[in-house]
Length: 367
Image (cartoon, rainbow, N blue to C red; front, top):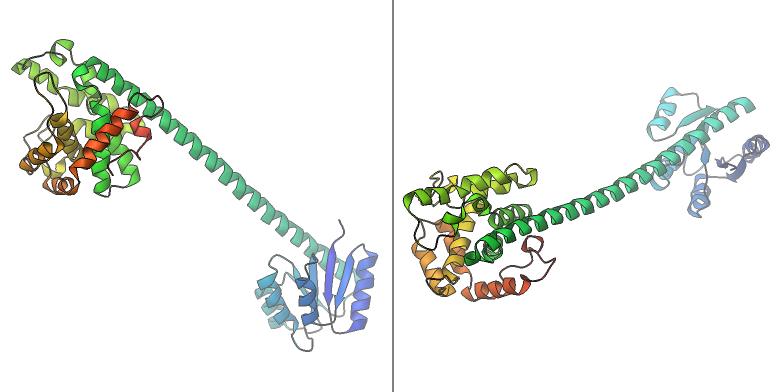
């Protein structure tokens, strides 16, 4: 493709000579008599591969033209042509963006050497810009694909987790649906506290998997209808540590495993398995403790009918500072009890639907 060169010089004789020399070598040349005319030609949008500009011209000089070209037509190479033999002028031209400097008088070989070099410089600069744009687009596209893949993978993980939770519910019919409900309650309370999206996912997974350790609890203990004896109670309480050991080995669940480990701790240090106290207990576990009690009080059991959410609210308030973090209790008490019953009904409605796992639907929460 023929390179187009804009020659800017107030001397028409110089323009004719330069044009003839360049056209003979295969270049397309356009002449401008001054800087203002050159800028107008550039503004008209006809692409140029190089600007050869005289330095000393009436009105706007070559350096001022150079400033305009660098500002408004970045990327086009500019060569300053002058009879001024001054190193300071040359240095100033380079500093302001010129890529070469041609002294008058010059012969054909010097002119062609400078022009060839400048046109190649411009071609490589344009090629580099296009390459960088293509690279950015490629990286952006691959990042988007990677993000979509990670989201799909995360969703598949959550669906697998829900299957594990459902398997646990099938083992213990008395608490059927408990994992989904307590997860929804935990999400709602955590949101009310202003927990961020990433931490919300961790807390939700920890809440959903809180009882996963009960998979290893013997049926004679887990399903015993009456009160557990001291030895059986020890076995039952092992589910926190067992669940933690199961979950922490999965990289994306390591943070959630801390909630599994600490979900039976009490704010005053009377809980188990480690007797953690106050803020030693992970925030997610402290939030979960209220959600877990809320579901336990309001759910039916063979030996009693579930209480109302208003009654559960009073019991949670009574245990503030002992079983529960007082600051989180205060947030809980600000929330309308009607919202909890509506959320429970929504979870029950979604439960039979395939492809609607609570972990994949954080929008299902208290309103």
